[in-house]
Image 1 (cartoon, rainbow, N blue to C red):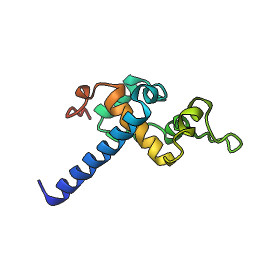
Image 2 (cartoon, rainbow, N blue to C red):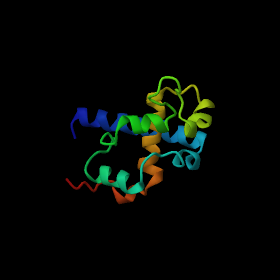
Image 3 (cartoon, rainbow, N blue to C red):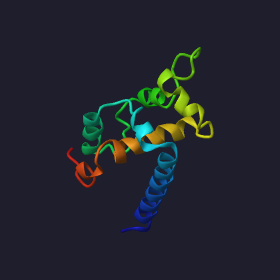
Length: 118
């Protein structure tokens, strides 16, 4: 393993630890309830090698993270109460948190970790 690969792996572990702690603080069940896509779609993306779930439109994640595209109504109804109490989190952090929960708590990671079908 090269030094660059080791650094990348370390960053990934730190990222995972940060969002796992946030998910536990907010409530994993509550966060699972606002995941905007089906379990099968998450699994499909992960198995195709999309470990960051970027093949799912960002606007879909943004809406689940409490932001609407409509400028007059910034917060989506479903996510407003959840995110209102966690104002310290940026939109990017909320999206990352939802993606973390989708990967590790919405579906069983044993279904996809180490199994890439391209």
